Image 1 (tube, one colour):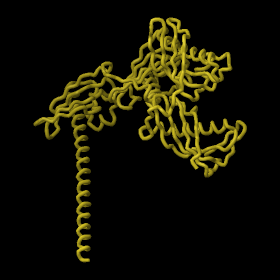
Image 2 (cartoon, rainbow, N blue to C red):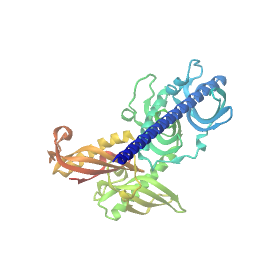
Image 3 (cartoon, one colour):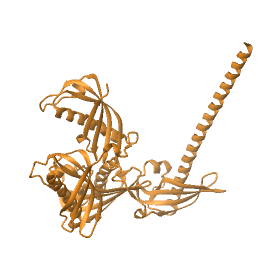
Image 4 (tube, rainbow, N blue to C red):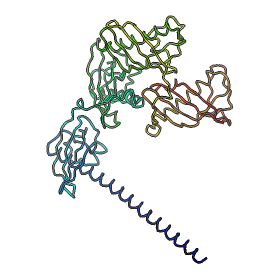
Length: 459
């Protein structure tokens, strides 16, 4: 009995020693992480101080700001940093500027710079520094327009804001209005947006007033192609470069899109489709000797193909998208862009390599909640029977290209669906029942309110 007790005592002592060792190891890891984090902050502050020194020595017009450390090489008595930096809006005539001010107050502006900063060891004092401008056009930018619908959505807001900001700062001429995203491309911390804009009839006001461009200003026939460049996700601070485009250039892309839409209408009528098909995006374009082959994404719409008088502008502006998603090949004759042939096949959404973005994009999840509530109410109202469902929680939000899929929890309420056009406040007026649902919402671009809805009972 005594031997057994001693054995347990030994086990307890070993257990306590193991816990103590683990505890010490955890403290060591935390201290190491803390030290590494502090060292990085020390490095960044010392580099920023070196950039301020360089700017003052070279009498630069504006202070330079550290964006990211690319490489760090330690030598016997010095450390060599390769960094990306950028100019800022802060004038270097300000003699009292310091590191915290540059970090928190000085907004980035072009150009993008690649710098070498040398600091002494161990003090991290300034030794030498030099910077050269990076040619954005030489970067191996990759188009992400077809891969990241959320980024394209935020790009639209960035473009609208940046256009307004630049026009307002100019204090002359006329405001421009954003029309369409041409492409969104990225490389590292750099994002480049190409977009179409049009000059409006609203003159730029010479004060700090606000003009609602979208609501108050009419388009003119002066079109622009604009390039927006920004770092990280700071799209509102983008540099903006716009150039006028001729009517021929402006109309060419529109002509192709209209010709493709006309081809889809022809295909629908030939095949006696129940509903008209709508162009979503051009994926690829291949030019041959006497024809052009387009690979596109399209979708069905709410517009019945029994309507013989439907035309391209009607499909574009009035016919709301609905499932399924289609992948089509459209062949047009050259140079007339007349219909030659077309075929479409349904895309299986479940086969797409969807990526969850719930933990990466709080803004998208927020808008997803509103989309889910509206789409649930819309579908229940269209059914004109049964009971309204109430949104409870987002399970996941995933995306691939222009497709967004939301999975959500819902519950049936005690409010019967009304058989007229009245409005029911489901959140306020309706009580939950014990009938729960798992619902899937699928939509294209950011048109969440028009999502297709599929709910299954989980009770």
